[in-house]
Image (cartoon, rainbow, N blue to C red; front, side, top):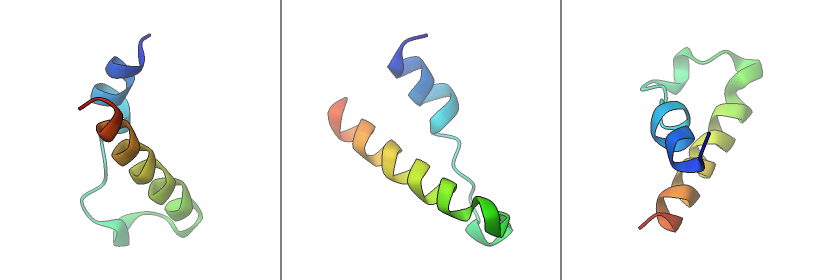
Amino acid sequence: MNLLFLFKNMLSQLPTNFEKVKKEDLNKEILRAGMIAEIEELTK
């Protein structure tokens, strides 16, 4: 599985409302959003 496939099909599925994310998963979702932003910059 290549990184671009992973990014487009799995990582980019951000929740639209962080208030609905479980408290124990909030840090993971924030980290994932940061990773997506970094990957977007690398793939430009």
